[in-house]
Length: 329
Image (cartoon, rainbow, N blue to C red; front, side, top):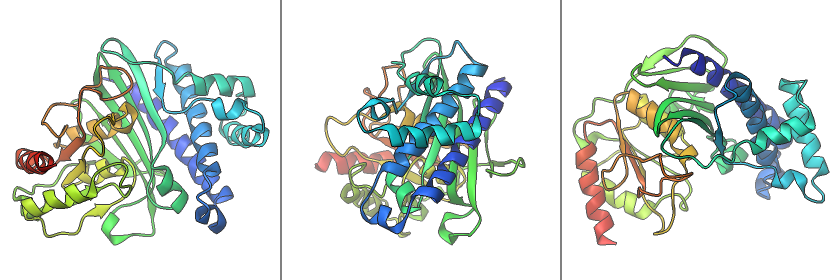
């Protein structure tokens, strides 16, 4: 089941990852990083979304798309140079895709979601600051059917086989289909291998994956959770949904995205692919209250608070510690 969907989704993510690599190689300089210039990530975001959207529409014309980007930045005064750059990368992958068709492909991502039917959700670049720094970022794509994630593909163009070893060879893709487990392979290779979560049953032996950005989670509270659990290992801090990949392959044990404000709502595209990749690898993913992630209410996880992903074995214990810390305020 979903063999063709997986084939199409994997091809789309590979092309998007190729665009992201090429844009960064061509546009990012030391000056760009110093000034936190977002133009490279904007070009990569929009180019990748156009290409993935076009590929999905060609294969599944009746499936709507929920995505992060739109063409607002490409239509305003002074946007001509940005639009030319986007089109250069789009037509480098799909030569026949015109300017108008590319704009339409990007704007297809406005689907509002809901509990019924099929739709795709994508994040063309998750981890924008990591992308600019030359660190971790992800290209995420997932298929939902009747409110449930049934397929997820996540490209991590800068991720090595072992994050803690900082290997030279980089560029991985994770994919999972409901009921069929999770696999990992090099972006430039077709040889996939199944992966599973760690077998850690003592929380003290766990490894936490945290966001680098304080705006995405509360680092102070995460450190207090680690203290309650007796965790000795240093946390792995990296951008993007790559953290889900580390948990799925057993290098990390816990990914905590604790609420950073009362009114923040997690976006569906930031978690759908990572959710199924961890679940199919044998792990567990809930919110901080232990509730399953609910993908049926629009474009956000408005019925959930934060996200906790673990290897499953210690999930209840982690939730207890998180609950105690959150209750402390």
